[in-house]
Length: 332
Image (cartoon, rainbow, N blue to C red; front, top):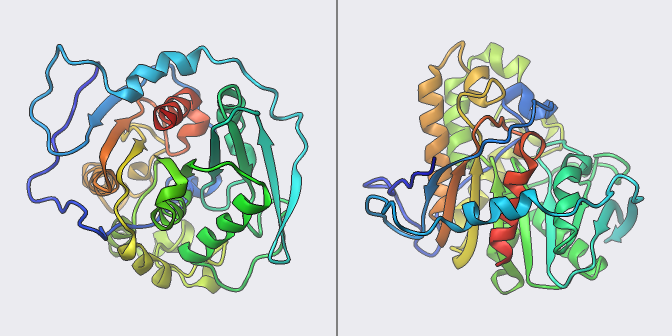
């Protein structure tokens, strides 16, 4: 079943610099663990955009994401796990990388908070049949170099600059970001519009959502899960969140670049709704989360917002075909 949602009345649509936000991996605690839930074959399109919408026309053609889902399910799978990681030097720091595929188009995968590149293997194995697709471990993860004292979305984006050059990636690039990787991908794309072919956001909360979450969480929840407004010294990736979030207010609109926004199923036990349910009604959290997805959606006049039925926060693990379909849509 497919349905399109209109943009909400009064919602701020990007001018040249739309406000937006940050993310982390997993639903509060599970956003950090990235545990694999049973894969689901059923995917539900919740919203498609490209500007304010009227009621959906049942005779209209399916949105581009839905059109690519069958293609994604039929792609040849590449044995990514057998490919060795390759170290790349960027400004004297080592990043471990893995690139597969030899097609002309290029895709770069950006992981969530503390997540290893292996989280992308199911997606990477399929995309490799249609594009050259690369994943990497940020500093402090896997066998990449040690953490710097402080990181923000701009420093993460600068690392991507170095990786794109060192790996010799052909531009323009489709950049894909999960969770914390979402605002990282958007920061890089905003600064490199001519080098960007499209953006895919995989369950990526924004700064406004996390500021709301910080107010909603109890001190006990922050201690047992994580503090959305932690300083660099308190963050597992040394993300200086109070400094990083305001950077996102300067993100430029993507114009008409393809933007695919995937969001988890709020009914999944592996969504942030469940983790905050002790202090916040799940319906309230679900609304705040969806508002964040609409804010991301508004960054492009050619965007789609898709709920992946049955999937938790780590959509690339729960339903990799849904992510592959979004990448194919952005490659078009």
